[in-house]
Length: 294
Image 1 (cartoon, rainbow, N blue to C red):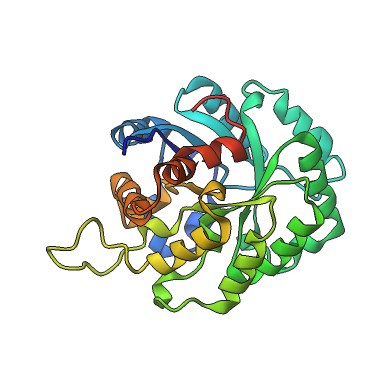
Image 2 (tube, rainbow, N blue to C red):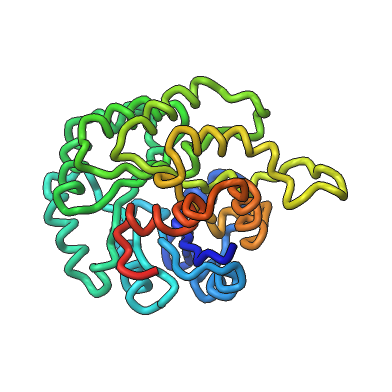
């Protein structure tokens, strides 16, 4: 089926322009310590049938988001920006309005904070954070959740307390799909609880580049059966209309090409109806991030 694809999750960076401390935390990430630009991604996206992307922040530094907004204004591939703002700052509402007033500010669709680096598993329960999340909702922006599975319960509490705010779960909550086909209930239970809240959506991202064992020369499509239990739970819990494709480029390049990631998502969703596939490939992202065009 020929579906115009919206990639709901990709990054760009230049370590010489902005330090990326997370890249220095693990030698397994050494292959990412270079420039990754939209010019590099664009031909790969076009070859895969991707018509637009959502570029997502990587650092908690105020200079990155204005640059991403300018990128969205200047490059037709980028349809939206998920940036960063200090949610704990008393003046966060003004900071968000200032971002929206910048060149390209109309492309700001959401904010993300790297919960992965927060030592407090209950960071989302803090009163100052809740105040910042309420400011996001008042501004019409969404909040991307990038977290460890242990932080999912606090995400459930936050989403339940702010029904007017859309929470977007990145990478299925960073579940460890290499642990095997048996679902870890310490992840699966709060994952289902988050999905039960109507103001949440989830990205089929991150896990798509995790390599599996080849199924033999006669196996159809890419080796994705090790991912199917996780994707099936996501489909059962969120449903196709609250699930969206994301490549996680260039992080995915550590183990898979852009084309491989798209092929993996296609194989994992090929049993769905055409409207369900259109939702995952495009419509959920358009709705969650209020994309004017895609």
